[in-house]
Image (tube, rainbow, N blue to C red; front, side, top):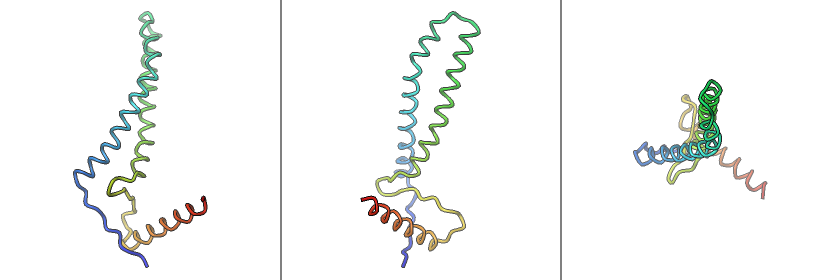
Length: 120
């Protein structure tokens, strides 16, 4: 017997919780990349002006952007799996009925409980 899953209302409080979860992680990644690049930036800034310095500056900027961009996917993945104070995000196919969603959620919960007890 399955029970219906009642969706929660999208409120500003819940939107801010998701936004903050994303923002603080982005800030942490940005600060970490900047700190790791500081020695390289100092070394580059001590170079004489020229083509090599320009190429190195562009390379560090590209590396920083690419790393930040790729880590954003890790952040989004974590946000989608996170449990918030009174809700969590559940992704479902558009064509599912509420009954099918409830059945899938019940099966997922049962599977996780079995895995948890099996790992003890």
